[in-house]
Image: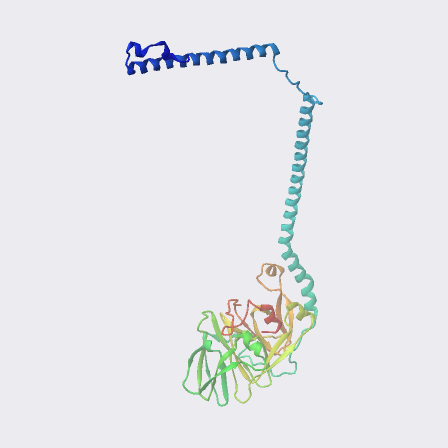
Length: 388
């Protein structure tokens, strides 16, 4: 409708403007409803034609299913065979591992047995093979012409030590003593420090602990010697007169009394035989008289005559007369050596007169260091090599 207002003669009929606008709005709403209905009818018709066209074409073609070249059961059989092969391989590897483990266990067992028996075999070798060869060598005499031997008080063996010993200096004598063993000292006499036991043997002095010694001189001066730190130590005195000599291990030396104008002469003696190679002692230190040797030992010090022949554990030996026939002698029983009760060798002394001196109980806990009583336990083999 091009002009809907033309149908109504508003001016003729005298209709007011408000009524006129209401009428026009109603006409517009009706026209819009007609237009919406026509559009919906057109969409429905279009959809109907599209459906009819689809029915005439039929359903879309379906792509054919591609079948594999190998049948499905064959693939399953191949998978089962592969898994079975892997299981068999795993079983074989487990069997090999069990076999290796069994061999390793037995090898470890026999290795432990061999390691356990090795000390026994080595000790048996040393005791039954090497020790008799060393003992078969003739004994050595470090000072065969020295005479007389060190005098022995009384007959037979004697304990020469006590917890403390009092030393009284005669005219022309002087005392060298380790400060650790000075229990008391008289005011009389002159006291000085002597740094080394012997300047000829600085290493021996250091290794044996005989350094920073107290030097006492003057007639009538007295000194009481005793250990201030070791409750088991006792002190003994060995008198070596002029013309005699004594082989001594400096580790046992506490002090000495010597002529002030004639310091003690220490002479090294070397032995390079098979016995020395086995016992690892190549050097011996011979103290020539006159001198009084102050020695210390655990639980006491004894001296005994060698007579026709005596033996003692090497660990106990402190010294012996240099004119004696000395030789290492195999310890008496293998059982005691195997259990560590005795060493492989004893010290054997024969063809007296002469004495040997020993401590009653070997004491391994001697302190080491410059101010101590040696370096045992640290360089024991080296010290034994040099007879310290």
